[in-house]
Length: 288
Ligand code: NAD
Image (cartoon, rainbow, N blue to C red):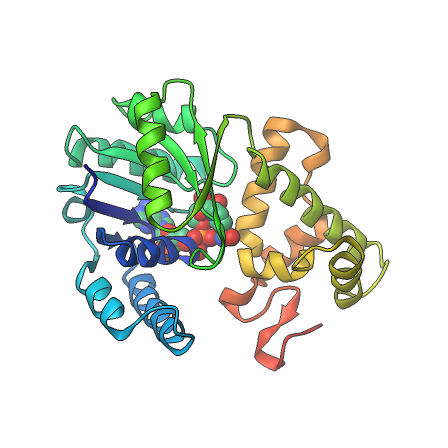
């Protein structure tokens, strides 16, 4: 039975996963290598609780109980040594994921399951960094985690059915819908989303229109809830670029990152998390 969850990485996704896990009744250790990120995570999670209470989605008592179950730690051993499940949400770079999975394999109990929140990468490859590949799976949450209804569950080659069923049950306990799919780079959602987002950057680069107009056309003409630039700024342009680079290597030319996206990332325009991406959030959210 899963009671203790460790979340590794307290960025955009990790903090959201920690929030939904604590609210669902799990004991949660949220770990990050960067102490500043943990401080930001605590603030952001506080804001989500506050908004949830204001909108009457949760009660002050729910908040209190969930906060009592959530601890922020800067020591990986402390985070995972009693864990029944570790959910990894570190950047989409295989060498970072490898070092984390090798370490948690040593530090966590033998029965502990491992899930990766990767957007694109192979759970089979990630499982190969451990001695328990049958207990490793991808558990793909969406941003913002507390609002998005889906968890996409991806089985690697060695993942056993029991692990997939337990993970599906945990996602459902967190109030999520699930789909279980087989592994292929990008799964279902990232494969489509990366393509649409990248094409939008090519359009911007070609001077087809302003970001506002491209977003409006996609939202109102194609009935997407968000425009591709609004979504890229929410996801993080660096995260989006990492996804594209991986899909370009694995699936080929159609995922080659648009040069303008590469340029934005080089300049530090990473989206909402840095205050400016395609849109400038420091001056009311207009494009520059
Ligand atoms: P992020 O950059 O916001 O956060 C990553 C966090 O990991 C940072 O706080 C960083 O300090 C920490 N970190 C870096 N190296 C670490 C290490 N060795 N040990 C512990 N912590 C470490 O990234 P994110 O957007 O939260 O993405 C995390 C994962 O989730 C990626 O695999 C990404 O592809 C995936 N994902 C992202 C989104 C999204 O919309 N951003 C959606 C679904 C999945």
